[in-house]
Length: 242
Image 1: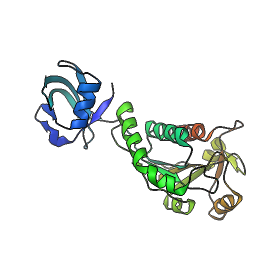
Image 2 (image 1 turned 30 degrees about the vertical axis):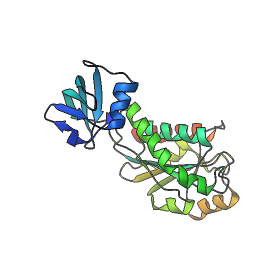
Image 3 (image 1 turned 45 degrees about the vertical axis):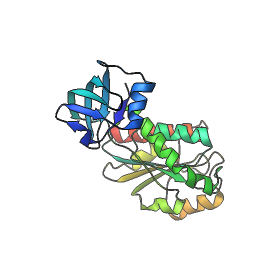
């Protein structure tokens, strides 16, 4: 069951009152939820509410809270993803999967071989924020990832541990890398995925000058959105087994 995002001000003791027009329309008119049916809500304090609809009116409805608890559906690490912006469907998929895998933030990167213009990227940020919210609802996350404004490679240097996944010019396999470089949960960790066409020679020089590791995921060549999932999964496994 998807969860719906609410503000704690909607809650009065054991009753939740939904007056938001869009939420009312979606739950009552589109989903056709009826009295006695169950709903899940999450507030800004990461409190999860399991409820049952007790009354439906013309412009609001009420839910009885049957159970409430602090949601634990989030990572306890500061993991971020920087993605060289992809064409529409692949970009949407990347945002959805990064959200499902628990990243704290998503950085749309503009790189030399990026297939999307800078002006287009800047106009898509609000849309991508909405996709994140929908993904949070579907996977019942307790926290909401931040979608940053468009960035360039020079902007990523503020992160404490940066891992560049690139199949060409790569230095080392990921599993060999973590033998020598423990992924530190106390640091801000950034996974970087390049464009479908790969990074440019100038960008590889940038990585070299800043001592950023170039990691391969193995012998197979992935699409960028698939590489993101593989990279994030590898990092999470590396943390858990490190």
